[in-house]
Image (cartoon, rainbow, N blue to C red):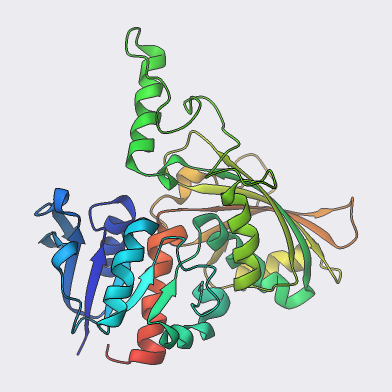
Length: 340
């Protein structure tokens, strides 16, 4: 006996990936429903070798369904997630709405899978921000060994993190630069994204940091350890899919780069590609469609005591969103619901 699963926001980038990954990982599905807004009603989406027609989220009854994977914005989630949860369906939410609620677990399965039992508080589990998810997968095994004091991270985040319109803007601006008369002014972003980088993701806060930077701080503390100090600079780059991060780590105890490499090679969800030669590292284009969080450029930081640097790359639509949500569903099924 398998699960009755709902994918909410099935026509978006993340929703489509959720359907793909459920099929790829052979999640034990007895019945599946793809939901979307009324403007997308009847749109066809793929689930393995099957084609599903989207149903209307507004009128859908979640009673009798086991798990709902939500991939819609916070405003819509605020309306529909409590409805689904109250009707007995466990919500795994990809928006930022519930991430900082102390009653709701925020989970990266390689890091804090034991927290899944707390779904019973509200029948809701939060999926973290894409840039946080890949970083804590890398940090967790190192933290277990040497205790992390402080993390300084700079991100290089792809436009797919903003959505399809942003991907279209990058594509059209790039073409427009080479074709006179087809220039495209910024619309999704405040400045040109083609052949440029923008040190601004989400809204600015009174502190001067952006909300994306604040998210990385707050979520790392909630998922991994509240004692860790984190500072982030988040940058949008002209890459379609795949987030990259340059991470500087200060530990309480000494950890040399060779031992760190060995630890990371054995860590769940991590693949180390680190040859100290041209091309001996992973770039975003190579991680697209992959499950792993890739680590390269592992080296000592001689400017601080007990310091390391590393390079972290992952498919933000997968580990940063859809894959992590499906992995949460797998843990939920294996440890709590036990139907599959």
